[in-house]
Image (cartoon, rainbow, N blue to C red; front, side, top):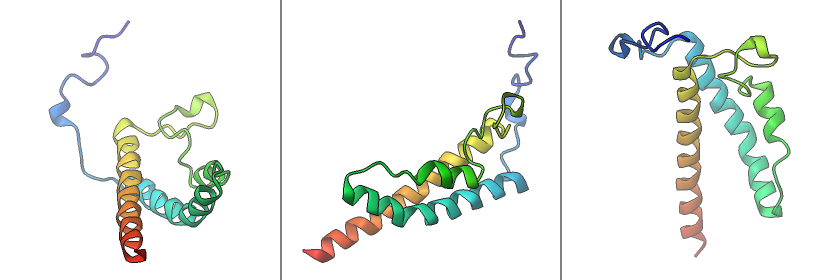
Length: 109
């Protein structure tokens, strides 16, 4: 069994945290998918139903199975940092939505 030194994670201080072209593509796809999903999510929420468009939209954006190796089927084989960028992008979109929803709620009063 390999130890941490053999796996290449021994010196994380040399890890590159610059956004690569591939990671930029992922972030752009997250933004596009969230913009496409938002009105559908609002409808599903108001109807009290699960949004059945979620998986197809994320599949089209190639965001499903992002950190899973391609050798296992439909995985994208992205590294952990790219996967973290995905979640950062989703969190950013969710915060933007929450702020706009709160503003609309306050205006409706």
